[in-house]
Length: 296
Image 1 (cartoon, helix red, strand yellow):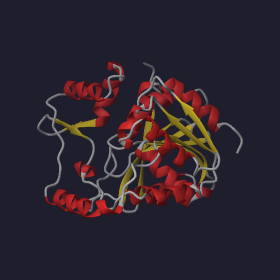
Image 2 (image 1 turned 135 degrees about the vertical axis):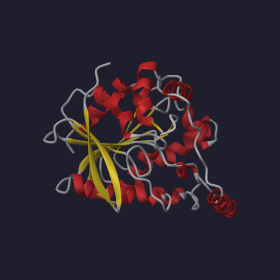
Image 3 (image 1 turned 30 degrees about the vertical axis):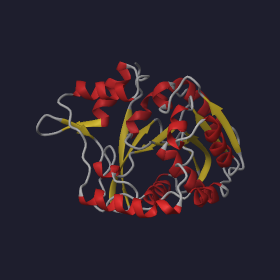
Image 4 (image 1 turned 120 degrees about the horizontal axis):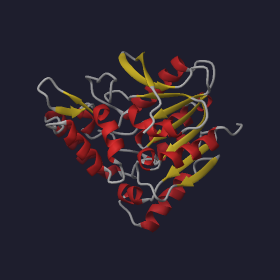
């Protein structure tokens, strides 16, 4: 497996030390990649290896993930938008940037692109089409759950060896090859002083958000997106599970979200699951490059 070398850049973002993994020549066109929940920037390695054109790729570890600092006050979804805003000001102060976001990263990107339409050139949402719809009557139970989890914070399982981490990665995603799992394992987990391996993420990310997801607010943001937008999704199984609905209901959910974005293109990789950048990085790289090189 030929691996393009990456470098680490550290940036102060709103009082936290942020890690940004970079590939390529800083003089090349910029492409920012935003990872999903419980993922890390290094997971884009296979996608970057498959890119044919010259890019300066910038992939931050979100706060509390990978090599970025943990936030002792906990995590709120709006922080991802503010962090992205600070990163773009620091890394591309003069010009808008092409950005792709996977899953949680795509959800943050879609909201950000509506709030700051002048800061993005083109955007790609990779299996990041918003969260399941909620209703107000769920609020009391959600607040109670949030307070319970604050009182009894979650933790992660420890692994006795790196081999166990590799095995866990492949159980999480059967499409992930052993070679790719072995590359990811020491980025996804870190060895402790006791010789155990633990996830390179703050377990407080598992605490439920106190505030319900309001689809109407997300749609209002998506309607303000002016950048050409690409949706890329896989076999659709994750989406049906995520929306907790059947095929017809999932399609209605998607159509409502599609209709909110003015300049929308769509691609599907049917032989991929949710982790597009793991399962079919070559196909995904081709789709993204074709999209991002188009004139805006």
